[in-house]
Every structure is written in structure tokens, then in C-alpha cells.
Amino acid sequence: MDNKQVYLIHGYTANPNANWFPWLKKKAGQNLDVKIHVLSMPNSDNPDPARWEKKCSENIKGDGEVTIIGHSLGCVQALRFLEKHNIQGAHLILVSGFDETTSTLPELASFTSTAINYREVLKKVKDAVVISAIDDDIVPFYYAETLARHLKCKFILMPNGKHFIDRDEITELPIVFDELAKIYR
Image (cartoon, rainbow, N blue to C red):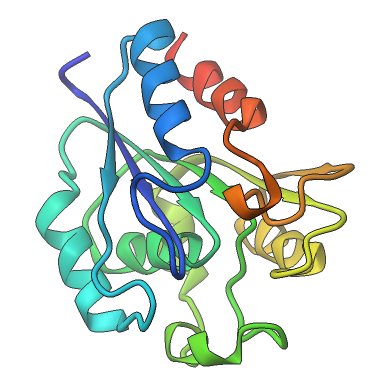
């Protein structure tokens, strides 16, 4: 699937080997013949919006079909990338995302202090889904629900799973694979 570009943007304090990312990369490769490029976002313990934008600009190709999977802060970054680049027909799978400053992570306000231009973003999105858990203690689900409303897309609220991180023993996330399979099967 040479023209299928799939990227995963991890979140705050994470890395490509954290959480459910290695599992998803392996499962997508084996079951869907899709290679997921898991970006290693710079200095994720103290992230800088300009450096994250540069990383995405250097690594995400806009030719062919593009799917961006974002987790937490990676969701904001995915939207910022779409806002600034000439991408058409993007697929978005956003997990535990937000698009505004949260009460739980005020240190990430530099990513959300300027509102996202959804008029620009929505022109570039073919389809999107936002996934959250009712018991998310890091990014409460209502932030993800607002994000889904802004994207005018499907919102999946899981009964549990918290923030979908390995600290909570989440190393597989079948709902994300299922949503990816809908695109590539």
C-alpha cells in the first residue's frame, strides 16, 4: 500500500514505544498490510509547539491517502498540522484528545492558546473519529466530546480505559485497530 500514509503522533511524556503504539503498529502491519510511522516527538516531557510542528512537517507526506492517529496532545498536533498544510482527504483517529486548554494539563496551554481554524481543517478531513473513556483522569472525556463536535464526527465513549496509557496497563487498544481497519480493508 505505497500510497497509504499512516502516522501516529504520541502525546505528552510519551514516546513511540509507549502505551499501545507498538501493538497497533505490529497488528496493522500483519492484518492490514499498513505501515504506521510512529513519530518520535521532540522533548515530549516539555513539548514546544514549534518543534512539534517542524517534526510533523519534516515527516508527514501529503501525497496519497493520509491517516493521522493522535493520542492526547498528539490530537492537537494533528489538527495544527492539517490547519497549516495542503493535505486533502485525511482520515483522523483521535484518542483521548482535546483542542482547548484543560484544567488537568495547564502546562500544555501553548498548544491551545490560539483557537484551531476548523473551517480550514474540515476542508481537509475525509472522515474522523474521536475516542475517549468515561473514566479518563488525565483528559476528562468531555474535552474529547467537544473535539468531536468541532470536527463534526463520530464520538466513541468507552466504558473504561482511563487515558489509554501503559501506566493503566493499556498496551493494546482494539477500538483503534477497528477504526483503522474500516479505512484500509
